[in-house]
Length: 264
Image (tube, rainbow, N blue to C red):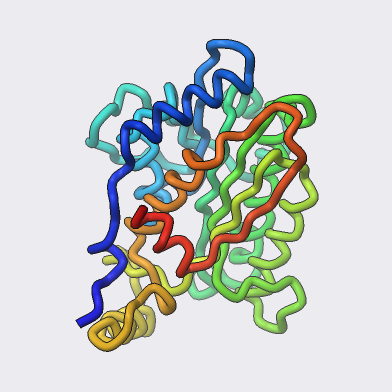
């Protein structure tokens, strides 16, 4: 039986966190510590990213912006700051103070057409994603300060696709590439393996099929546990401390690559 990705995960090492913080301070030329800002922390992936951000102790503050507060009872809860926002007002100055002062952005927003409708899906998975990324860059003076941004997209994302889901994801990626982050990390996971509270029968059937296939082949090419993806996203950031003067770069991390990152 092939191991599932979650069984191969390696926790974040303290040495990695130390190197990350030292490299960051050196890049800034000051003692200002890194701070993380996340949207979508109430979702299946976002919850895992939030947990890893706080548990790692790599960031002095982790701020969550969303329609609802996150229920978090894990380690270092004192570092978590939560703000309720209206995503329709994200592009203005209404939340400038909440966004300001952060060095790393994480976008885990996502819904489904079945839940939100065609227009609602596009608004969340494209409009809100792009608005948050642009405001994060604008407010934190991305033109003069090194900024890292991580996006949870999807396998098959393609702006020229004929399918709404992959087309929307591709258009969001395309928009973020043009913003100018010091480093943009785009994660393209396959099927998200989790016990979703609002899972639908078709989605549950698909997840069960992937898990069944894991008895024959590794799931690393088919899907990924949300815990593995969350760990990979944070490990990726710690492995790539951005530097002052660094040219903007974009890296796309596939499903298989995310599993590999989480295992190291």
